[in-house]
Amino acid sequence: MAYAQPFPLAQPLQKVAAPTFGPDLAVRLICPECRDPNPNIVEEFSSGDLVCGTCGLVLGDRIVDTRSEWRTFANDEGDDPSRVGAASDPLMDGMEQLDTNISFKDGGSGLAKELQRANHRAKGASAERNLLEAFRQISHWCETFSLPKTISDIAKQLYKRSDEEKLLRGKPLDAVIAACIFIACRQAHVPRTFREICNLTHVSKKTLGQCYKALEQAFNLTPGASQDTRHAHTPNATTGAEDLLVRYCNHLDLPVNVQPICADIIIKARELGIADGRSPVSIAGGAIYFTCCLLDKPKTVRQISEVAGVSEGTIKLVYRLYYAERVRLVKEEWIKDGKARLDRLPVESGSK
Image (cartoon, rainbow, N blue to C red; front, side, top):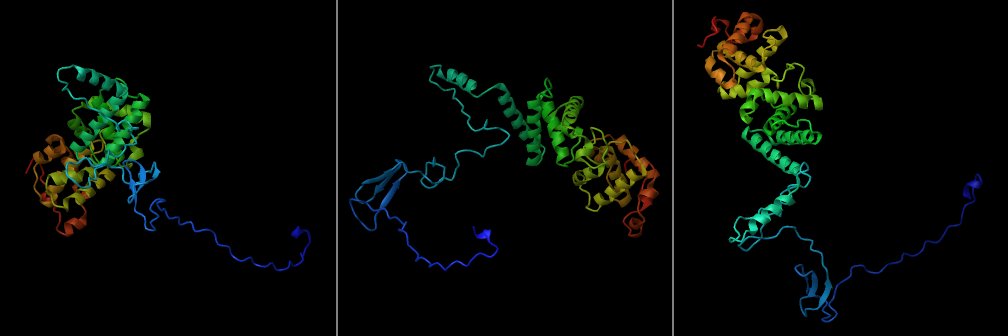
């Protein structure tokens, strides 16, 4: 071996062999009958043959069609870019790929009823049909509530997991779906209250709360896991009160400068322990009324009550708590800039 000695002897130089050239791999297909150097070879995908366009000799068979996978079903001539089906959904596990509907028209022979019965048995077990129906209902409710597709996907995934684990056996389907949508809104940080979900799905608050608590315990979906610690740890506290201001101020058609000032007032009140224990919806309604009076943007208690979905008395109660601590809640810079004036705040909590 070369490493057997410390200093191996130098080996004589070897002559470099001349490069060899291999055959030309650019094979040209020529018809053996025509012998034309410029052959007219046609690929007939309908029959899978490779045919000479001059003499018609079949040069090959079983040709693979490498074109796009769609077909043209249009009555007019031209390309039809319609696909053969929709994109597969990973949550469906292929259950939505094939679906056949049997017509009721059979000319009075009675075959349509038999075909429908056979098709119904071939569609699979009832669990798969229930899953498909639940997914359709989740998509419909999310579109009705103007929720993004992300929330719909999270709700579907949560429903499928709960269905596989049999967590809510015996509960109404509407209540289970409503709880999944509520949790999906929390996970995606899209503020929705219990009242809004109940009004959307027509599910009672008690039933929705039972399904919500069951899913929360099963999947460890504690409020602190998906929300900030500033939020109240109650089922109604889907998010902080300041997170509800954007929608409420938009529905009330308030100027853009009202929402940030109102959010600062809510945060300051939370630090001071004002209105602790109240629901975020009540705090948001009372804070909006307090801010509107402070900035001279008149909105009645009734208008705020209709948007927030709480009673006028609740809004007045929160306003009284804020009014008692108005000196500590209102920043001095707002008063110096002329944005806010404490004398605009009515002593009574009635509507202006």
